[in-house]
Image 1 (cartoon, rainbow, N blue to C red):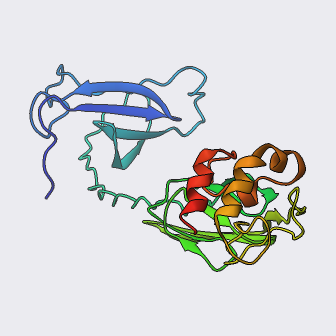
Image 2: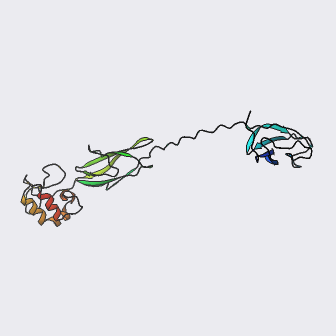
Image 3: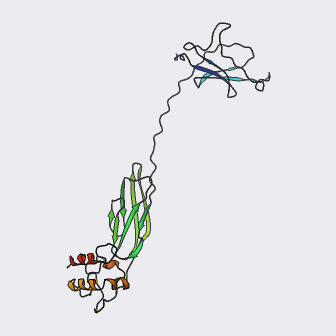
Length: 256
């Protein structure tokens, strides 16, 4: 046996999807009176719905839930129906799945003279929880927005792998960074081209004699403007601040 509809429940009758009668229960499980003059659920179709030959199916709803039983409309007929509503199973909530990340990145600058300092930015959506950058020159980073120094000329393919709670995704951008070799010139009064003794991309041996010494500091101090007018500044910007200044002399001094 089911549970009787509580007092105050609403029972509605529908024809062709339209409500054509309604009653409120005044006792548990009872929707009408057995008395001849008592209140009952009256079903009244419209003139358009009832033509005399039409068969009208009555559907019942208890508190908005469709009853298992139906009936056929007969003018003037009084029917007694025991209506039930099957228990509607509670639907299981659909588990929410985080979308896989769409990997995107940006870099500034993407082209320049060696050594080139590049700032990378992760633009992945939705936000990632871990990162693996491969800069294409043998160096890696797990930072979200790393900076990387490309010391030598070449075209570099960048890979970014990100992970979220839903999994990992990756993006490879071929030849994303282009590093150009600047032309070197002999400093005024010297006979040899500047050299990079330790192959770190910076030219500390300004007079090209194979040794970093005070003479090189003097040349830098004397010809800073000349460097900017004749050669790319990157190989001589030893502190990577984007300009040639006295701080570069200090950086060069510690190389002695």
